[in-house]
Length: 163
Ligand code: HEM
Image (cartoon, rainbow, N blue to C red; front, side, top):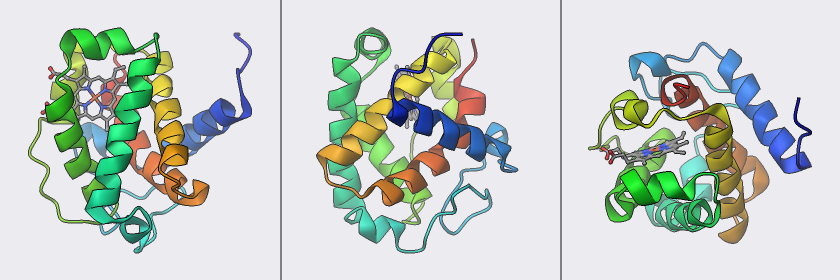
């Protein structure tokens, strides 16, 4: 087994593992939300979106997320080859705002449709999780608030990781 590279990565993997034990319905494309149907561990507080700075704060976080994704040679080539940054930033802002309890106005493809052709590995998925934590630090989102978003997105691992 490869050595775990940092405490942060170990924690992110731990959060993912915990969230994966929740009875998530992501494989049925039932989105986890603060109001919604898919319980996450930790749960999503009703003020999670406000603590992120509302939809505008989420948008800044998504921009930071893509900044860190594009710095990471393990995954940036996938986004360069197959992605569309403007569309992805807009759709991720909608999706993340929704899972944090905001209005459900996500207009993009299902997570399985968007990712199945990409043959994404768990290592690549975890690289995006690292970028997500780095983005939280960059926009000064407190760690426990960041964890709620990570936990809300973690169930998607089941449909996004296909290799
Ligand atoms: C929980 C984690 C993830 C979330 C929430 C997420 C979210 C999204 C969203 C909302 C889209 C736009 C769908 C559309 O265009 O209709 C998308 C597309 C995409 N995602 Fe992800 N994603 C995640 C993980 C990943 C990972 C791990 C990779 C690669 C390492 C990745 C690579 C891509 C690419 C390349 C596209 C563009 C696909 C296309 O336009 O054909 N995503 N993702």
